[in-house]
Each structure stands twice: as C-alpha cells, then as structure tokens.
Length: 90
Ligand SMILES: [Zn+2]
Image 1 (cartoon, rainbow, N blue to C red):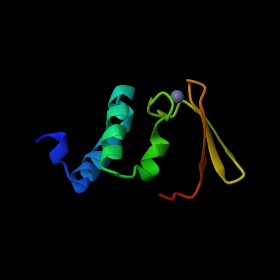
Image 2 (image 1 turned 180 degrees about the horizontal axis):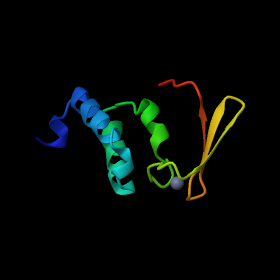
Image 3 (image 1 turned 180 degrees about the vertical axis):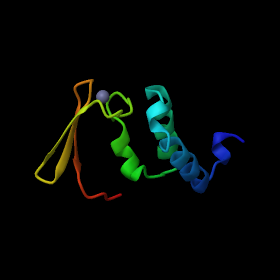
Image 4 (image 1 turned 30 degrees about the vertical axis):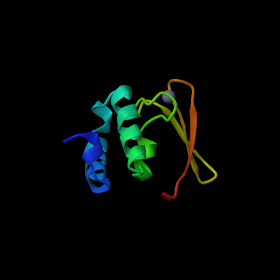
C-alpha cells in the first residue's frame, strides 16, 4: 500500500498507534508522522503536546515543565519554549 492510497481513517489509526509509544520514537520518525498527518489533514490534537515542534524530539519527562495562568509551559532541551492551554481544543 502506498501513501497515496491511505485514507484519512488509516492515517488516524497510524497516528494513534504511533503516539501510543511516542517515547521510543526518534525526531526523524516524528517529523515523518507529522508530514503524513498534514498531508491527509489529520489533526494531531493532544498528540502535539507530546513532542517539540521545533526539534521534533519527543518529551520524555526530562524537560522543565511549569504551570502558569492556565498554561502548561514546557522548555525543551533545544531551548524552545512551548506554551499550551490546559484545555485541549483541536
Ligand atoms: Zn526542542
């Protein structure tokens, strides 16, 4: 099966499977997954919170995390600061 034959539903399944084991993934794999999701207009929802959008490294729980004014603020090892609303919206 080629990528072009994948339906949105297929990609959603691949995405859920991929992110269920995010901590064992490499930045390269995450980048690829994001590209695939984008190509099928599949939303990453809360999965976006599981990796750095700058260097694509998965958050392994070693990052600096703090909560401020309803935002979760994660500082990645690459220096990127990620602010996320505590309420998930897609
Ligand atoms: Zn990063």
